[in-house]
Length: 307
Ligand SMILES: CC(=O)SCCNC(=O)CCNC(=O)[C@H](O)C(C)(C)COP(=O)(O)OP(=O)(O)OC[C@H]1O[C@@H](n2cnc3c(N)ncnc32)[C@H](O)[C@@H]1OP(=O)(O)O
Image (cartoon, rainbow, N blue to C red; front, side):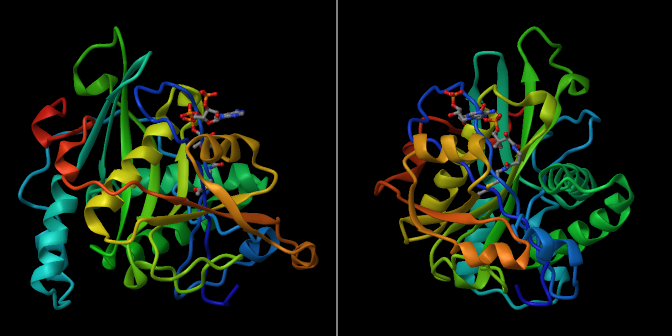
């Protein structure tokens, strides 16, 4: 992997998302242009993850006008009309799902949620890589750099986060958990500068860095993070072939992705092991063509979010 990237990449994905309540995860990818994270090499798994969220509860409060548009302008970057439209799509995207044990809302991460997303990803990355606790601070630093860089390429990529509330828990914000995250790249401009191997086509949508907080796994959250990613891709990209990486040793996400309709298109050569990296599968799924994405039965609006 290029010297300038730190990446985690998660994958997962089941094919029958309808009213599914199962479980399934993926692995993350982190990559920053300015970072050289030695651990990355030893694991080789591009986990550009944002894997673990802090435990603190948070209400998925409705999106306000403060969001992406202002943020993007403040970067000084020129945005075309098409990019502005896509930013609006990201801003208003919400995937809601009632699960067997609770309720899940998935939407794009806001700036003030970055630190919690960093915590979740760093925790997940650490878990996947079996890293000693001593690396946590450094890991969080690199994950944050990565997230900042990825946010700057919106609307060509986006970090989604999922909030979960168990049935029977109060509807107040205190019982809403920051439960998982996933990153979605929509096109070449949103692609990672140093992609994991086997290399996916740069122009195609790509899903990575999926993670669900340990205490909330096996409830269908991973499955619906994947489904939300695919829905958003359908709205943001004309390309219907979605790619993701999954490490060969990661049974849970592999099961999920297979169940979701992803197939292995290429696998790392065994020689990869000489670089102290785990072997990965590159998996792909062709999304069905949806004439009217808004007809989705699971996407909601911000007004549906608990306040
Ligand atoms: C592209 C990428 O990002 S790859 C990186 C994937 N991320 C990781 O590996 C990080 C660590 N793992 C996790 O965060 C979680 O385990 C995830 C994200 C993989 C799965 O999240 P969950 O919310 O637990 O998954 P969910 O409950 O939706 O399960 C969906 C399906 O995945 C499969 N699955 C999930 N967990 C497991 C498991 N422990 N063992 C076997 N299969 C599993 C099953 O097929 C399941 O369907 P089922 O419940 O009907 O059997």
